[in-house]
Image (cartoon, rainbow, N blue to C red; front, side, top):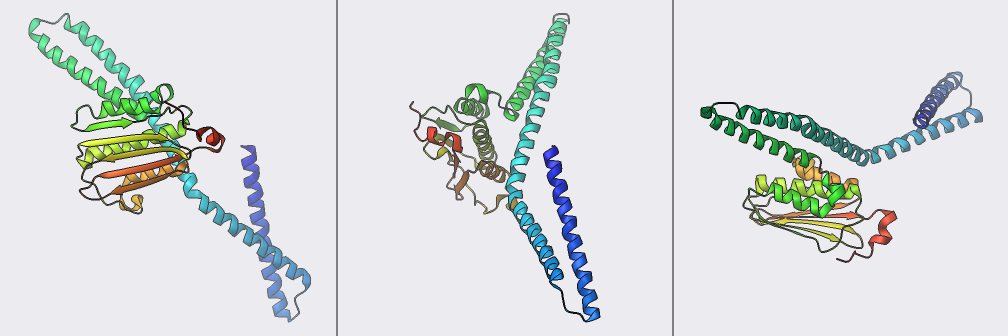
Amino acid sequence: MKTVLRCRSSATLLCWVTATLCVVSLIANLLLFMAGQPMPASLVLLQLLATLGVGWHLSRGARSISLRPAELAGRMLKVQEGERQHLSRELHDDIGQLLTAARMQLQWLQRRVPAELQSACGTLGSTLDDTLGKVRDVSAILNPRQLASLGLEASLRAHLVRTLANSDVHWSLECHQRLGGIGEEVAMAAFRITQEAVTNMLRHAGARNLTIRLLRGPTGLTLSIQDDGQGFVPAPDPAVAGQRGMAGMQERATALNGSLHVSSQPGRGTRIEVLFPWPPRTHERARTPATP
């Protein structure tokens, strides 16, 4: 923190020095012009220093502007994940515990009410059980805790079982290699992209078949998501076109120096290909795919 403040104070001081040089140079030029005298070498040097200072600030500003979108995307994703984890804990720890307590109190009450009220207590108990199950499902979606313990493949399979249980979609998850050593950020990004793609498919595509593939290769981890739904016309800039789900997927891939390509046409389904490159420290180890 002290280093950041020191850098900021140094940059601020340099800004004031540059502004002072520009003002002094301007006043000196005006005085010489009004007096009709030639410009001395010291004033030329002063103007040169002022010009160099302005140029440095412009280059620094351009560099910070060019870096800002990527930094902003990464920061937004971190904040988003933090908020999701916080909300997941609130649902699981607070609301989940309250619902569990209400269910236990209902069981105590059910043993003491007359027979004519047993049916109503049973209905209320079923409602509480359904609500508690929904809360747990939403908590698991917001914060997939099993990623760290079960790994990416098992976590995706559990999510697909839970999400597509009541749908008519026939799905498959293909992964013929071990995914050990996959970084936490890459695993989370792959999980979130798949999560968003499946949600979009259920809401808009009307697909009957879904295939998800994970492939560990020399260049990185490849994620492929394909359905036979209605398809759509991918926008060059999903954020501008209002395709927020696609924009979020693109941001997650870009934040990890990856790439995302969407192939879709109306009536011909959708295919999403994502490549997450290996980090430099694990690149050599990842060049040889793990054996099944």
